[in-house]
Length: 344
Image (cartoon, rainbow, N blue to C red; front, side, top):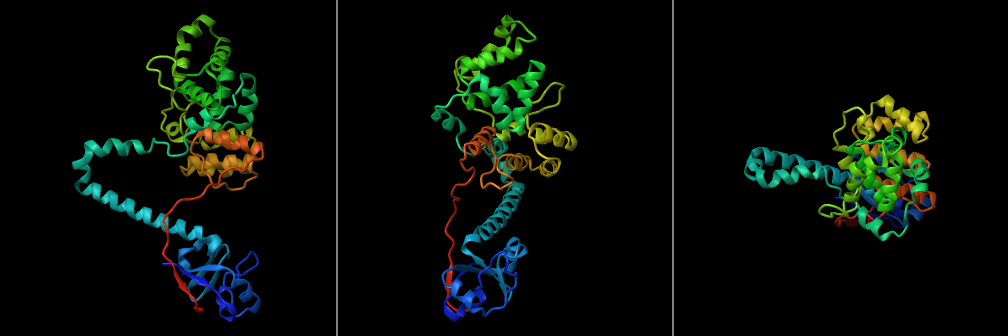
């Protein structure tokens, strides 16, 4: 386990302060470094526990140990968490294969099958309900161009171009618009305005108005439906001509995705390539998050991962207002440490 080192006086040679100009391997004995290190806390760990910090020359190495500054401790904790999680997943898989799955299939199988579709992030609908700001129909084109994630921008553009969306696309986009503050009356006016470029107003009222009111909980069993999460978008089946719902980072080919990122998200070709590579590796939400970082935050990595299209919208909109995105305190259990007073 990690052992905390509080260096003092002349015995702090091994705890030379790391920094951008410091070498990864530092010779103990610097007096100035000793005085500065006396006020800092370090964690002594085997160097192989923090390979990323070693590679970036952000730690001091001495006799096979790395001295990690307290502000960089997250790297150690994240590595331990990943290792333990991987081990637990392997053990769980073995237990299921050994017979637990057969005995508990009726109870556990539906729960396990639904985990991938569950959204575990903030309650988007509660945040929107508490937000008094409304989205006006006339503001939708500007909001779509500047703040919609690629999945919703693709649907919005297809609707404006074709004056129609299939059922899957209508559900995905209409619930998203509802969650960003578009009221039911405005939603009906918006969809009717788009569809009646090809059909009559009477046809729209007969074929589509009921479903829109149903999404707002005003028809049928009056359920107030919530917007699709990223996982639900990823689980959508897309294949027929004219279908644009789902997640474009998953459904589009590499060349088509890069073209869309450059044309619609205003990324440079090099930035689009970077995002498309993550999508090719199956990291669809990371690709979406990276597109947001490049487009709205100057490429700065955010602490908060994109897990919901409406979360993306709020993060993008806040960046325009000068509010920092991401962040939040990370939870976790306590780590037992042993205080050592002597130089290794």
